[in-house]
Image (tube, rainbow, N blue to C red):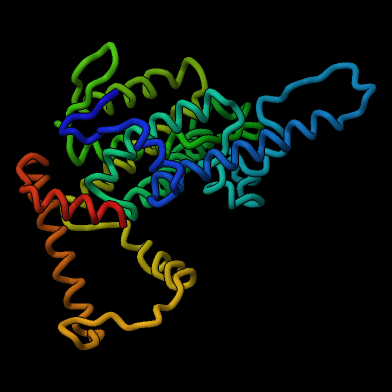
Length: 309
């Protein structure tokens, strides 16, 4: 697949950037892949060291180890495993499952990063996954059809988070066009609508918990961008955490940054940072009003540099 506006220029360069781990998209994908490999190795060792006289090998839907990290539908079990609301969105047991999830995440995440940057991607991924878990748990405890399986049911996978990212960027730039193999030029809003419609119509056919979780992620992605366009950026709650870790792992510079041959005071630094943020906000407002092509070359370069932070 190729993107409009010369966005996706070099497939090899894109993969190199992915594995460099220098932005939120690559870090989130690498975490998913690392967890998958670790779980696969653990399952293999568990299989090899099972009793030699086992007459029948029964493959459970979810391995015993994954049960501790997949989010349960049972509220009682959830109370004993609260971490699963976060851990489940990085957990995959099937190679096809993680492959298609990461393929869609890379597709939507690359466009998302171009317009909205690292912090907003992390927020959308995490809160999309949390909303997916909430929808899944609520549905299995509200609707009578699930009462017989609520105690045994668990959900896992990044699908809700991935759908949240896709719906979010489709809501932000609905008329952005991509070239898809066999389909040609398609607008992002139609791709998002198709995925949501498939999940909605598939609930009664197979994997109802997964499809319901996807819808939860889609709701978050849509709500987040609506709030963002109205001036409320819910991803800012990640700023203090991000600053803490950045300060913790960034070595202190030996020389102070200077401006006009003198050190910059805290007030000057904050004023300069605030002015820079105003420029970014003005560019995003311009995109929402007139689209990406309305930006000048300098504005596009500034937005691109900001997305790399």
